[in-house]
Length: 196
Image 1 (cartoon, rainbow, N blue to C red):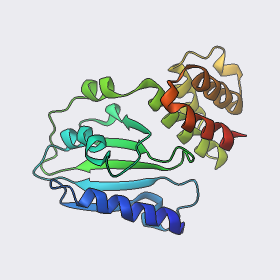
Image 2 (image 1 turned 90 degrees about the horizontal axis):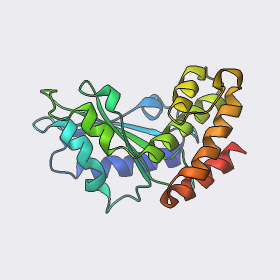
Image 3 (image 1 turned 180 degrees about the horizontal axis):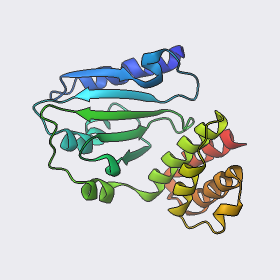
Image 4 (image 1 turned 45 degrees about the vertical axis):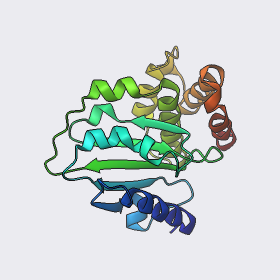
């Protein structure tokens, strides 16, 4: 078990549980299983029953901005309305430091649409999230070709089918270095460090 990651997760749970609309927070994923390592992220289910889970998902970055140094925010529009997940990167020096907050509620309805969440996503923050997830899966030896191809379709890398996963990850990282806004260059530089 990664004790530093568990400490960070406990702090995040405390921040979330202090919010008035939160009924309960539950750690899940590798931390809950006791298998977290230095490149694991933090997965938290947040029960906001009695409140709109999609609305809460959109509000989380603003609600935590004074407590957490949020670098990147990314919503998962393709999962709405079944799941309302927001990912927050919070360590510019370590792109693996991401918390995925799954907002749950009973009843599970939300007025938030996938299009609303998609419009709020920043293209560069989204690509940083995808690159980091794909790099993590690649380094762990997981099959991630389909996800890498899906990622590079978003930025139009040519001749992808004839390139290795490693080459596509390099080209995506180079695209981020050349195109992303200045506010993301610190975390992108950290991505470069872990890549090399």
